[in-house]
Length: 247
Image (cartoon, rainbow, N blue to C red; front, side, top):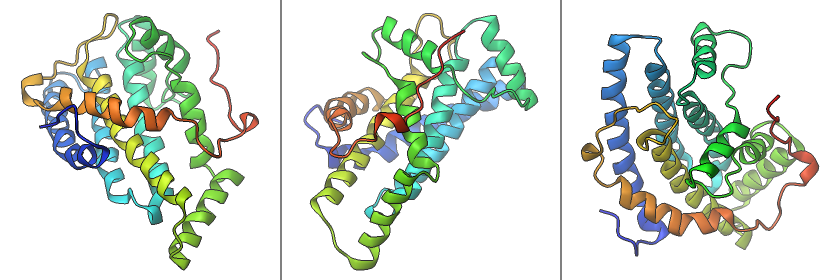
């Protein structure tokens, strides 16, 4: 079980157990929801939860200096599913219409969450102070697509693998990604476990995920400051596409 004094290594080591417990509970609830209605709002949310946990399980396999490119790509996919899940939990007709487009596979970007509304919502309920999901998603997009910044990163990864040279920057980067990994899982718990006013309940049984609170506390206390610290070589502002404002 997680304790408030656990270090980053301990939190990373404990992640698979709590992630598996969340996966099992999402699986059980999604099975029941799909049997009741394959295209309900609840089914959409639970399926997105399953997608995010599935990808997150894969991320742990490539959380290494030599495979950080793969980690970044998987991380973006997991975040997109998680953020859309949070959007789809909004209890209003506009969201349900969007879910209908999503189930229909319509070509109207129904898979894109409204980050501006999500940031406002999470700040309003003091869940994530100064939430900037849209900006974080845009930064991740820069590194997940074949931009010059992504190519620069890939070059460093390959040089490291081919030469065996490890620099202080490499150690800092892998520490950042390990912290990002556990914080990402904590945010996935937020998206699936918490029932905030204005969200539909997903009905997860918290007794079946007994270690999630301790894990989230540790992930945010230890990993949060690492993730939020100013990076040595941040992406230039002009490379980041700002989230769209609500019309």
